[in-house]
Image (cartoon, rainbow, N blue to C red; front, side, top):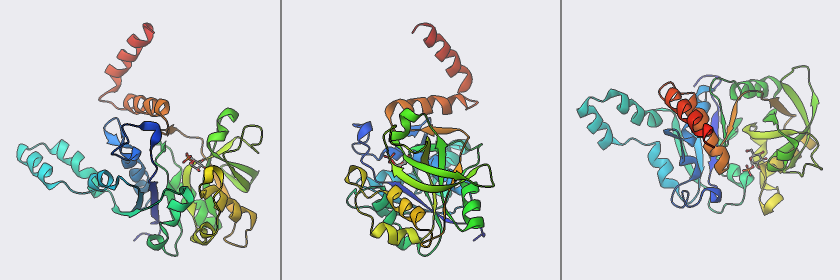
Length: 296
Ligand code: G1P
C-alpha cells in the first residue's frame, strides 16, 4: 500500500425521494450521468486521489450497487466472443477500479449515522468521505489536496465552496479564518443548513471530507439535529469547538468545477454538461441544443 492510500467511505443509503419513481428499486447513486452511474465517477475520483479501498454504505436497494461493481462473466464472455474489446473494457471498468466493500446502514438516521457504520472497516486511520450528490470535475484537484492538508497539519478537512447566499440553506455552512495558504481556511464553527439570514458565511460544505478516527466517538454521542437526523456537520462542529479532541478542522476552498446531481434540474444539467465535454457527443448535442434554444 502506498503512503498516500487511505480508505474511502461513500454513503449511498439515502431514500432518493426526489427522484421517485426512478429510485423506487434503485439507489439514486446508480442514476446514469451520460453512460455511467453517478457513483462510478465518485469511486474514480477516490482512486485518482490514491485510495484503493472503498466502503459503500448501502440502504434497502443494495443489489444494484453491488452488482455494478462485480464481474458479469456472462456479458464479458459474450463480448469476448464477439471481439468487442471496447465494450468489454467498459463492462470491466467498474469491477477493476478498487477493492469495494458494502455495509448496510439499517435505519436511515442521517449522514452522521451512515458514517458511523464505517467504524469497524476504517479502524484507527484517517479516511475520506465522498458524497455522490456532488461530482468534481476530474480535471480539477480537490481530494488529493485535502488529504495532503490533513497529513501536513494533522487536521480534519472539509471541502468548502462559495455559493449564492440564497443557496446556503441547502448545505452545512462554515465560519472561517484565513491561514497562510490561500486555499486553506481554519473552521471556527459550522452550522447545518442555516437560513440565509443566520448563515455566518457563504462557504458551503460540498460533499468531500477527510476525517480522523476520533470522529467516530464524537458521532456516537451526537444527538439528532436538523431534520431529526444525526448530522455529520454537528460532529465536525464539536471537533472545531474543542481542538483537544483531534486537532483543528480546516477547509480547503474549492474553486474548480463541481456538478450537483442532488435534484432533478441539477441532475439534468450535469448530464448535459458531461455530454458536452465528451468528444463523441459534443458536436451533435451542441447543434441540437442551439436548434432547441432557437425555438424556446
Ligand atoms: C449533506 C450534509 C451537508 C453538506 C451536503 C453537501 O446534506 O449534511 O452539510 O453541505 O451534504 O452535499 P444533504 O445534501 O445530504 O442534505
